[in-house]
Image (cartoon, rainbow, N blue to C red; front, side, top):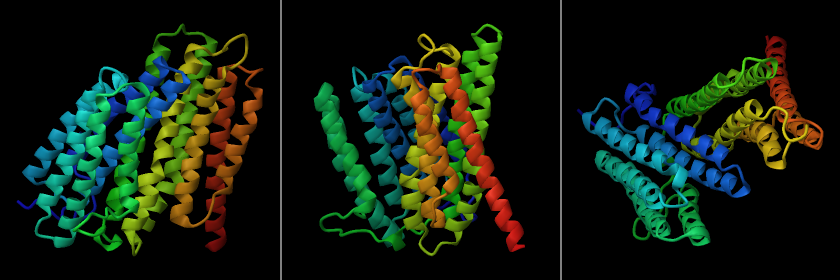
Amino acid sequence: MRTGQGHESGKVGFVELFFDLVYVFAITQLSHSLLHHFTGIGLAETAFLLVAVWWVWVYTTWAMNWLNPAATSVRLMLFFQMFGGLVLALAIPHAFGAGGLAFAGAYVFMQVSRSLFTAWALRAHAGHFRSFLRISIWLMFSGVFWIAGAFLEHEARWIVWGIAMAIEIAGPYALYWTPGLGASTIRDWDIRGEHMAERCGLLMIIALGESLLVTGATFAEQALTLIPIAGLVTAFVGTVAMWWVYFNIGAERAAHRIAQAEDPGQLGRLAYTYLHIPIIAGILLTAVSDEIVLLHPMGHHGATAPLEGLALLGGPALFLAGNLFFKKAVFGKFARSHIVGIAMLGAAAFAMPMAGPLALGVVATVAVVIVGAWEHTAVNRRKSVAG
């Protein structure tokens, strides 16, 4: 059975869905780590680790565009990736401490082994083979910094791991130029756009679902009184509103657009590789804010601490900003509803000294609901006019 040139229909294979399960755990680890270390440093560490988790996931998603998910070797590769992802997720709470080598080792193993395997699987297709050979070299180069950083402490680890991450983030824009091999071309990245869109959509569902799981588990430990119930309803409606903003209009139309694009690789690189990072970061930060609302609904003497306010308002704002630029990249224009929603969240920050987390959570939820309803109404109005 062949390993390359899979996904003839662009459909996601069941083994890919199975592979994603380990990322439920990774996202849970990230949100719990942030909640238990809710400081400026904790926020920075979580943001960095989230990018790393996203990066290893999205590289696998790109590779699976050209691999056959029914091939035994591909499935075995994904199972090894799952085990690496499990180790990676387990190391997240202590990645900047004693677990640094476990995190870096799992990360480098996943990145390099998958890229080398993909190069081997596509060896009969010269353009793809050379592309993944270049990618493997870049990842091995960055891997040196990942492993070296694991043996350092504090600021030194930040610097060296920052270099490693910068190398990997720059790779796609540099087209993985490598001495002796030159650079890839956008034409080499002839991805199946509908597959990329579906994979990203499924991960968004995982992130939103994890938010609901955290909310439900936290609520179950609270007394069944009016305030916790109000917090539960606020968190649930907010999560549904975020689903609506991403999936109701943007996801389906974007999937159709990238499937029909003449250069799906370029659109996939910008819209689905880079611009989904703030979207998933916003979902994760909002999940943390939902737990804050349930645990400390009234805040400190009726006020909201600055970092708590950052989660409560910054999470939805980051989510809307990610969607704003994602839709701009795909459809060519900014959505006014998203801009207004971000402005509303920014204005609500002035109420932090006077309002507790529950009140701010309600405001944030209302803002996202307004964005979703505005966009839905505007699109339906344009359809009726065109019809």
